[in-house]
Image 1 (tube, rainbow, N blue to C red):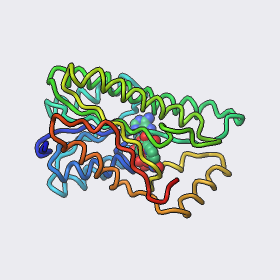
Image 2: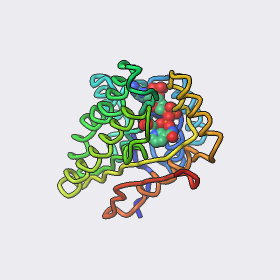
Image 3: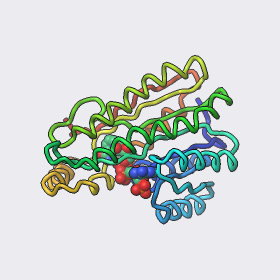
Image 4: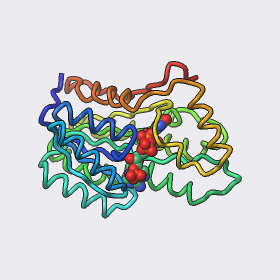
Length: 249
Ligand code: NDP
């Protein structure tokens, strides 16, 4: 078993939902966390909560789509903590709308954040992990990165398929060569703020109806699975975590 106490983790999308829950759980397990997102007020509140529990957190206000901001955020993390044991590439957006509405700005935001954000952060962190000859990278894909969900989810699914593919290829490239583990997390429906970016009223209503129809996962459920994989013995790479609400088809 890998002990987490004293390790370090950088978590993107830490201002709410899955990222915030995971940062809290890791901090409780004794991990020093860098918490990254755009909403600094949320990150400050999370840091206060972690500090109050005797943990250690560094606020990194940044946009994962901006390579310069990502690089300087990782530099600050390394100045503070010296080592990076875990990277959780979790920031993402899901504005749902059908293609013939041509919400091109939303398509671009999904590509820039969900795909390029993962690439930007990986490019900034990987040289440190290679130098250390150790590390664990988690990428949040989705059930939508395994199957196309249906009308409205086309571009989102395309971005999450990209995250799944990148995770698997990265795992092959850095496992044996650099002793770095890579885990693709593929959650089903989780109760978070994610639906709030959907501007199409009909799709938003469908999302709200689905939330009422089944018992969603809690963000803590996903955090628990990440901790399970992070604590696996060093020779074990849990390559995929496909975690669904029991009622989800
Ligand atoms: P939330 O909306 O609660 O969290 C999304 C997080 O991403 C926020 O912290 C947000 O912070 C951050 N974020 C968004 N854009 C950027 C950006 N440009 N730069 C930095 N941070 C950014 O939703 P979830 O917790 O549900 O989402 C987390 C991940 O889980 C996403 O990748 C999502 O696609 C995935 N997922 C979610 C599922 C669900 O059912 N909820 C199912 C499967 C996967 P801020 O706005 O402050 O920048």
